[in-house]
Amino acid sequence: MSIELTSITKTYGIQKAVNNISFSAQKGEIVGFLGPNGAGKSTTMKILTGFIQPSKGAVLVSGIDVISNPIEAQKNIGYLPEHNPLYLDMYVREYLQFQGSLYNVERPKINEIVEKVGLTIEAHKKINQLSKGYRQRVGLAAAILHNPEVLILDEPTTGLDPNQLVEIRQLIKELGKDKTVLLSTHIMQEVEAMCDRVIIINKGEIVVNKPISELKTDNEQVIKVTFDYKLEEQFIKRLPNIASYKNTLENNWILTFNTSEDMRPVIFDFAQENGLKILGLNAENKNLENLFRELTQ
Ligand code: ADP
Figure: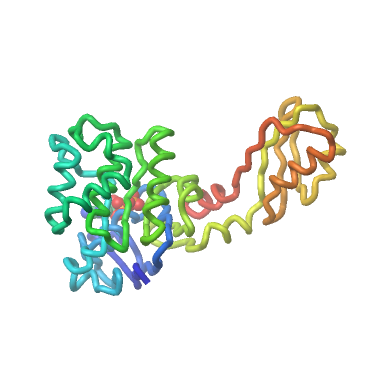
């Protein structure tokens, strides 16, 4: 296992920021660490990276005990804190070379990383000239300079505009292929877009630890569809596994299915068989969000 937390508790005064939590993650996994503000995400991440010590419990990263041997463990950890701390007056390449010098990273390796995170064109700019999205790229580049096995990303997409969001998610997925990534967020869709597994933490305790695919299978599916033609209810009723339906506008329907099967191809076939065209189709995983709300309220 790349990450192994066992019975971790962290107490501030009389408050338990995290209470007896355990989880692990292995190479190639992108794990979403989800919870409302104040749930204990940052505290857990700081413990994992060796920046703070837990009150109780054990933490291993790449098999190294983080509590007794933080420096050695940190060689295997890339960390992007919530408020990406960058030297704004430095140039991108200069900053990465400076960070790299702390780990004896050679210049050709830095150039390779600049390219990998999509900073080639911006590399000669000052960090303060960069957009938030590009600053996150610099933070991610700095986090992977020493080729760590584990990447810990604290709210890596907060404050990004929709385009930057898509690009950074894509980059994290790419970087995650040969690493173990733990990323915190308070946004459910973020986890769906990027992660293989979700750990939900609430009031310092883990309430869910499951692969995304398993979460989805317990759920009903809600699909919004627009046909090119007004349909009668009796047609809609013929759709397999249909649990309920609502005709919102002329040709728009909200369809709810009770099945783990992806119903989108079935709707396409249904349209074709009935001589209809689909003008819009949007699958929502309503229950995943409901589940999050239920578990964290
Ligand atoms: P999250 O990252 O999920 O928003 P945190 O881990 O930052 O949550 O915080 C968990 C709880 O611990 C919160 O109630 C927070 O106020 C408390 N906490 C975090 N850090 C400290 C600290 N250094 N001193 C006192 N309380 C803290």
